[in-house]
Image 1 (tube, rainbow, N blue to C red):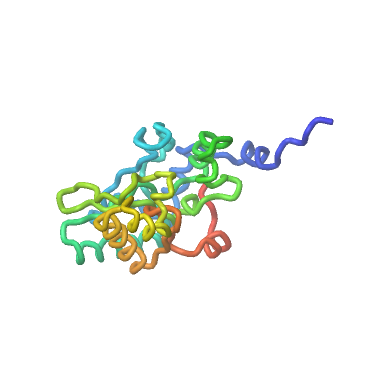
Image 2 (cartoon, rainbow, N blue to C red):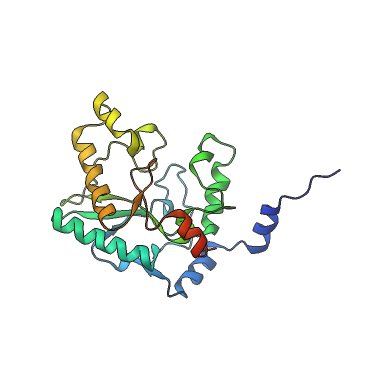
Length: 219
């Protein structure tokens, strides 16, 4: 007997959008904010270029950094808090709203590889797909990215905030690197974000359960 076609693939075929269609959907909604208009932020969308772990531009026509208005307001607060504590420093955004059309592209690149476990399956979605997650670092007053001890999208244990104390004790992370991570974390948490314990750069604006039960994914 021929195997049944997976329901996820049927749904994908029926509802998949292109990044360009996703962009038009977001631009037509009052729920989302173009955060590139905020002068207190620097923007460096890694997946809209080849400067990422896949060395591929996944975003295509979706090249504008959006967040849900709730997340955008909190990020603006974080940027102001940083400027007050560290004059001249700026938050630099590496990833923001990632529509499911782009999540499919990312998933197709990693499924069946060791990196699959680090990427949300589009069938269930990522917090990025709702516009409630942001990946970011800090630029110092000279415009140079602060050294967080591992690159953005590093899949090693070194990237995990929950292991910082052990790595500091072993010397794998320096006191300055840990202090810079804590600066980012302190600013973001003060503004109402929640850090993902596996990635120093990832913050959610609301708890995952609240987002998935109360908001719609961006196709």
